Length: 162
Image (cartoon, rainbow, N blue to C red; front, side, top):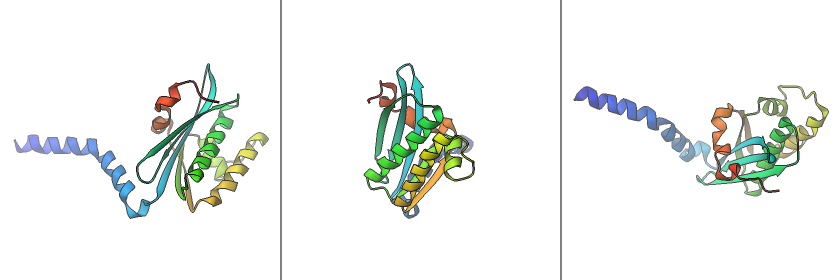
């Protein structure tokens, strides 16, 4: 009986730990007023678009889908970051973590990658102009599999609004 209980606790603990860690981070004084912004792009037969999900520090979530004219994948990714930062500023966010699955965008904005395509430079300039408006803005490149929250939005599957 003791081993069964120990196995149950071990199994249960590993299943709930991600939720516990997330809730602890959300309520920690260190992360007070910290907003998390997820951005992604998508294209299908209906055109291309952007998906944004902004987790407000109090636990609420703001989702937004935006239809875009035909752009390259990298332009879509940049547009998603700009739209997401604008959304965060609109709602008064001062401390933001940007979660983006585009390694190129994150590394070009942070200066780790050189921008070879001139048309992408205007996006980097716009993002760098916006960053000082935040007290803190951390840019994180995450695997696409961790960015599922944005594309899992019910609005993301619908035709995008202009």
